[in-house]
Amino acid sequence: MDNTSFAKALDKLRKADIERQLAIFCQIIKKFDTSAVKEEIPPLARWLASFEGLLSSNETVALHVSFAKLLAKTNLYAAECKSTNHSCPSRSNPLLRDQYGGPFRLPIEIWEEISRYLSRSDLKSLLLVPHPIREVASEMFWQDISLRLGVYAKPDFEIWHIERSFGIMTRILMDPPFACRVRTLKIDIEVDGGYRFDRRTNESRAYLPQIPGPLERLRELALTTIVDCSEVYHPLKEVTTTLRRLRLSTSTNIIDTIKPILSNLTHLELATPLTFISQNGFTSIFKIILASGINLESLRLKGHSILADSIHFRNRLNALPFLREFALHLTTHDHHDRNLVPAISKFLQNRPSLDSFELVAPDCLRTGFDEAWIGLNHKSWDFLSSLPGLVRLYMIVPHGLAIHKIAALIPPTVRSLKLSGISSRWLDDLFAISVRP
Image (spheres, rainbow, N blue to C red):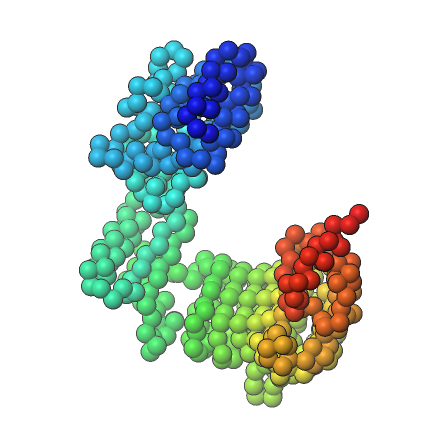
């Protein structure tokens, strides 16, 4: 909206009745929603103030929220706080007056709405502004804290982060109201290859005895660069009853590590070999998970196997009763189990709670992978019709599967679709078939 259009819109506002004024005002806000405005904010704020007391509570809240989004997107208050005097527009700008001549002020709930649309750097700058939004910004800024130690090569950066981390940790210990604001505390520490994970946790208890042990209440853990899973065996034993989400990426045997905690997990994501050598020979990760993962809602596996894992799915068709997400990404083309995909299809069919399914294998055109090695064929998609709650689908399209067959087999509930093995030239045909009445 240019200046001329804006002036005409304001002229219409002056001549219209209250109901028409509200409609025009909402249209102006929508027009500005996609364009930058600065000098137009004060007159808009005056008109917003003039509606006070004339609208229902629901209309007032909706109008305030729309205006708050407009303020946030234009970064008006972020720009003001970066000025030399850190003045606030609502106090320094004489145009921001309500219909009675007093300063225009938004309710604190609206400032909270504004803060949700500001970046973290803007929230930080607002900490210096003498305005009610400062308290709101402070509340939101300190909800998530990230400390980084030993990750910078430059000494100046490292010293600055050490001092900052020490100051924040000290305040958490000494200032309970501030500590109550913190919801997430993330500490990044560079770990030497010779240091064990359990040694690090013991060090943290020694250095910060006033803070509860870092694993005593742990509910989610992600370890993506573990060289030896034996390093986390003892620490994970401490969280057997509390840990709910686990993500591991390693090339070593994880059976002994996850088995004690598997029954309590709701989310498990592994990027590991799917077959391990044990005292009794080869062990499949599927056998362990299907036997013990009674509470799993999400299971994501990425790796390769040298065993016929289909037998474990066929033997435990009723396992994982709460499963909502299943993902299997095979990483090599040497997996030979012609019953794998049919067994997985049989295992997952008729599960109304399943909302996400992924089955991915190496691209046969680039790696020489044969779909028949894992039992992938045109029948592999048939079970999808038995999943009424499926929302996300990522799957291989077998060679020879007709495009109209694909469109017919994709459940209408799917909102996120990713297909592997299909040429882009088929997309137009797929969408054309999908939208036919």
